[in-house]
Image (tube, rainbow, N blue to C red):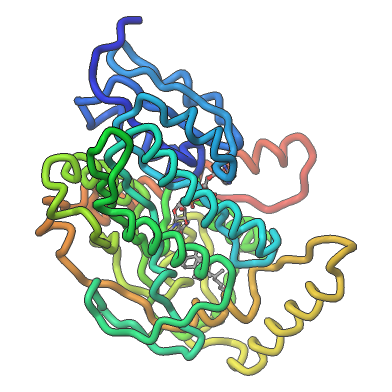
Length: 380
Ligand SMILES: NC(=O)C1=CN([C@@H]2O[C@H](COP(=O)(O)OP(=O)(O)OC[C@H]3O[C@@H](n4cnc5c(N)ncnc54)[C@H](O)[C@@H]3O)[C@@H](O)[C@H]2O)C=CC1
Ligand SMILES: C[C@@H](CO)CCC[C@@H](C)[C@H]1CC[C@H]2[C@@H]3[C@H](O)CC4=CC(=O)CC[C@]4(C)[C@H]3CC[C@]12C
């Protein structure tokens, strides 16, 4: 295999949901690279096979919270896309662990950039660094400059906000050798697409309830969603343009957006699940909000009581209920103005791809059924 003399990109968290899409996106659309280093705690060996005669995909097993691991991975590279994170709003991992990975991990990436002379860093942040806040203030078609009462209490959004602040403050810092570091931050709303773990859970849950989804959130509450392929595309463009126009992109934040429709979280999921015969029951929530809130509180209490025995972490808790029940949608063209971003995938294409993937979940479950699992599967 002959590998050219292009740039070396490091993708932290490159085996995750977004990270693996990003690696494929870079391979297909970024002509200027000769090596992609996929740095992750848990390696997905299938990515190795993506190497071709132009680009080598190198899998590096490491822990972002260990500076030495990060330094080694960054040595001799040109640019880092830092997506590695613990994504947990359910209390599956202790808050201290979330901080260690998301905040200390990001400090390590910045420190390693400085010591290993890596000039460019694109950070994957989240809409959660802004909101929704626990006061239930709606963020309706907001942009990067919209004023909003930002209030963080939960470990995940708190950690993403701290990490983003560090990343932005590091823009313009001197690195070893005297050059400057340039950083920018991308804030996806709720990402969806092939490989979305939460969608798998909703699909499994729907099978258990006879393909019925019981409406819990008022349909008027809009939740911003963005297709994983477009988030990956935006990272690629930001990485490319950060090197060409560092003074424009450096120190900036950009919401990730595309043409996915504004809908409630549940109605949006139904765009895919209905292709597998799922039905949403009720045009309004079947359970009054206060009952749902009590249930969420009960789940939180159970989690606390069972702590030490096992991890009880259901999807519904007071925080996820608050996020799902508060409108958060973005409308902006900052990324287009600053680095020419336009979605690579139109909504129809994103939907088609996601439906194909959701249907493939049915096939794999049907295989399970054929070898003895109980269930009732059909798909149109
Ligand atoms: N999933 C979503 O809806 C959204 C995600 N984001 C952000 O996008 C990024 C990617 O998220 P997803 O792909 O959904 O998550 P994911 O969990 O699929 O991917 C994260 C990756 O980071 C790796 N990782 C975790 N701890 C690590 C450690 N100590 N050292 C090295 N690698 C480690 C994991 O193994 C995983 O492969 C994250 O930064 C997340 O905060 C932002 C907005 C929405
Ligand atoms: C009340 C339930 C009835 O069906 C529905 C609960 C859905 C929630 C689990 C999700 C609603 C909104 C999601 C979050 C949102 O998309 C923003 C996020 C950004 C991130 O960076 C990480 C993931 C998440 C926090 C996402 C998590 C799941 C929801 C809370």
